[in-house]
Length: 331
Length: 291
Image (cartoon, rainbow over all chains, first blue to last red; front, top):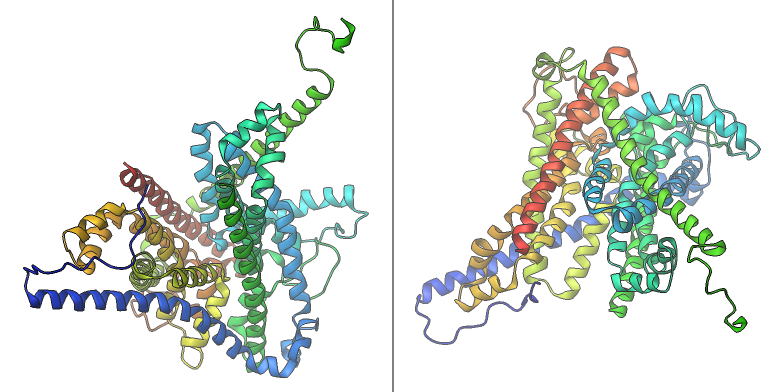
């Protein structure tokens, strides 16, 4: 629809420059100025990313030199005694995010399939925006809702049921007295990542050429077989990239997790116990951190979070790019 | 007759294997449908619980007085912080997008897009830590620091959104301006930006909706306030809605909880209205562009 955009600037008009030399000079200066301002803004974005990384590492410097890499595996965190370690939070972050992804990704991909291939046009136009609206709810409200409405339900109904039916697996231990648990946090994270993964995967499925699907149908494939045999395989790397983006979001969520995870210090096998994540520890303790080392250690948690976040995002980009190439090759 | 291997007179109905495959397909379809309605159900439950519990706290007094009866200082604070953040992020975002669509080469485009996506993917608490280190450490908390943090969150959203609409501006508009000998800056200001204005506003409103509910960075850079009266000083820590909800939910006393529900209702209403409005605008400007 849109023609390729020229990046070389307007063609130089030779001769017959009526508007006069001064105006031409002015135009040239204004062109240069516009270019300069735009370039500066774009450059600022690039520099910003580097400065953010530098500042976070800089803030963590005292803790990095005091604890080194052992910080990652040390599981005690006692600000009053100056002992800091990220071990339990690192584990809590990974567990809560992966549980959220394990619950959320299948739901989200199903929603993507429904919205792109199954739903009638009218329903699609209504449900699509509603699912995306779920992503617009601020995390602080979701967390507040989580601790007052979801947590009692989880503690009173869901956890006992899971414990009774699947209690022989250690991760489904006995419920606690409050609903604040790693499991509740995972459920809240699930609510956050489902709309993200769903809307990306819907767009991916919509891009699968119609005639390939019709071809499979013509060969006698049922709708599910078309999805399983044509749609999913041709979009698999994109779906993985979408899931990684969702995972990145879950890993870094601070506020809602702080509200529902219960800030536990111990490492437990059971999901129904309290725990803590990197981001939520920063959010809950930073305002009250007094000693320099406490602050620096919280910054160190930030460094770990930054590295994990960048890895998951870059991986998503990389896998997504591969998908682009593949799609271009088939066209 | 026997060499056919099947009975040609048999009725053409599904049997055995085919019936199983169809049933499985049906179940898969039902599962996907259920997932979609489940997500909508969760949205309905969240909004309903906020509305049902928040409505009781809502009154005119609640909106216009200070603590302990009202939330005016937090509302004004959020408005100011987000307003200044928009004033920072919108020009920067639009200029970045202009650079990407009008000037940059292939390599710069890729680098800039990558960093914008990375910034967009950063946990917001990291941005809070960054702004704390940059502006608050050794100084004090301020509303302005909050604005800077929110501006960083908004920048990639505005830039990518604007870039998308700039790419939709028909190429022949540009070519027409070029053919008339119009200089580049005039083309940008009088042809390209006006025709992309709707899309730029959409992207900005969506970014505002996202920033208005951000809590994590503000906890680090604008959270120590008493919230009794309306403040207009950006150099002080400013009361704001998300941080107040968080504090009240952590304190857990019943009056505070009731107030937090009321604030949640106000915040969620603003944000959902903004994002619904932006989407409607988006649909309209897309239709206009493609027609």
